[in-house]
Image 1 (cartoon, rainbow, N blue to C red):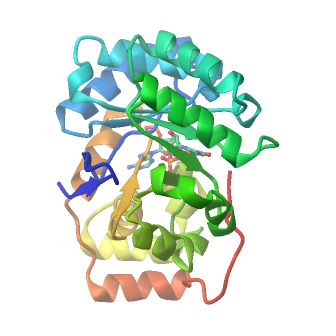
Image 2 (tube, rainbow, N blue to C red):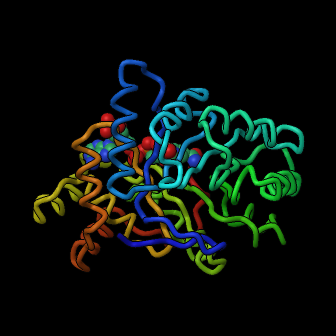
Length: 276
Ligand code: NDP
């Protein structure tokens, strides 16, 4: 599988695993744990979670799934913007580490921007990195102007996790090129449009049918076709996980890309970064 390098040289496969909504329904918990384990076995070692997901329960599900195999996993979690102050960041991190049952996060992200100055958050994150609680830090849902505001701290920011799928292409105009120039990978969330309207789109279905694959596979292959982009679809059902695994090896043809561009036009001017 295609590997993507973070600025510190660590590499991860371009296909990772999302976990939003995991841990919310106790009756699905065993399935969620099993799916994450199967994903790890297949090599999708990056797992993305957040203190927000299930108010901590998603992190507990991840903790259960990775127990005994920490070394095979690249663990990403995120903190709320109201936990972004000098005082709150280390406390939020300690709670996440406890729920996950690990001593260190591979990557810790500001979930979205709030009232705390970015400089203060970056300073708190650097302290956590020096203490060894996190190996690296990054941000999420930050547009180019926010990233520029990071100033010298931008060099220490490992990623920006943003909404990117066929329906939300705004980041292609300026954010992706900006991050590429910084040598910073982008993590694409909701790559299959949360399994909703996008997958029923006529043009996407036509491309998928002609190739003999599913619309989700085309949608995911499209995201993975961007240089320096890691996709983190969430899949609890076994069929979805298998489909997504196959999509990681798919390369869309220029004709398929052109058909998708016609139905989902690429941005021709700056658009504010969309977020869920
Ligand atoms: P996704 O685009 O990953 O869609 C997940 C949904 O699509 C689930 O309902 C899943 O079903 C379904 N699905 C997965 N694979 C397929 C498939 N092959 N065919 C049909 N349906 C499929 O959306 P998410 O919003 O979950 O985004 C992915 C991850 O990104 C999140 O889980 C989270 O980790 C992160 N994220 C980050 C955000 C941020 O602000 N930083 C915001 C949103 C997400 P099932 O589970 O039943 O298999």
